[in-house]
Image (tube, rainbow, N blue to C red; front, side):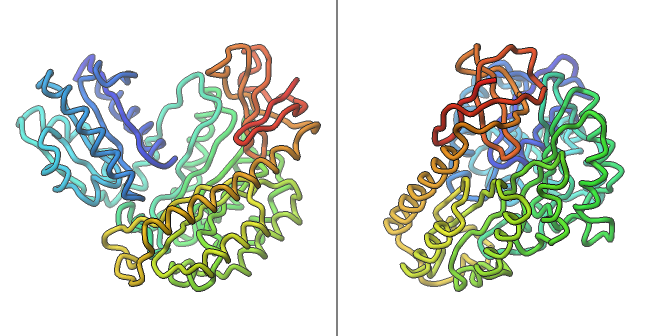
Length: 438
């Protein structure tokens, strides 16, 4: 496997980005170096997402483009990983006969073994069998590039919530937490390589440690806060049902913990929340928002929302808009309901017509844009502390960084400030970013 090159195309969430970084590190150990272009590669890996139907369509479309490279180079190996691979391994082999390898979400560490088997036998291979000790294999963590200022760290895998619209428990498995010592060791290694901010990842990150009986997320954050050289800590994604007062209490009090939380609400209708099996009412969610803002008035709260869930009426949708008006989220990811085979919601009656779902999504997104711009404009004239991440890709005279509240800020400055915390005055506000001056 010496002197070979691998190209990885990553779809979907931050967890997939972390998995792709792990794949790069694992394959580097057996002679594969990463490359930036698929046509330069000896191996192409498509790391897929299955959270929505559109994501699946994009993945299969991308595979079709790589088929042309395979036709030109019969020695090119094409592999598919991620959630589509885990849930539809045989369908991938059937629809893409040029794919050599399909591997699952919980056997990434066996990639070298799979590659050797294909090279020795010349046969296609599909193996999505979860490894019993997969959570421990995460201790073979990815190596951050020397220039990285921020990095992801997975602290748990899987989910036990079984929201009726979600495939994660079926494709990522049940909830498991890593040992605190392993997480701390990974973060210390990242800091030694120059990382100054970490984002802790988990499908339900604020349930960390509950099943294993280890200290919870608050205790873990307190230990991470002690690591010298680390400047900022973030975590995502939080489930409202597991957001404790102990955790809320850290916002505005722990210096390194960023003043931002991603707290998906999904709907503002109690009837729809019940059908989704979310485990809380809108009143519970609003109470959490109130507690967060009492602790830290400037905290940035972002969310996820689904429109057109089976049975959603105009009244249900109006309740979501009313909740948005009350909370005034800093930002939100919003989607039309996408049926996922095998989930409980797939069997629900009263489907919402596509035209209605499309209209509702447009209304919701327009409202959120108003709120996002309003929130950004409120920062004009104020000071903000920025962690400088990189030179701006579109203007080399500018630097790009983020506030503790996760707002992107562009401002003129020397490249030597990358990785530093700097003070800026916000001079302009746009929908997705701010303008600042040192």
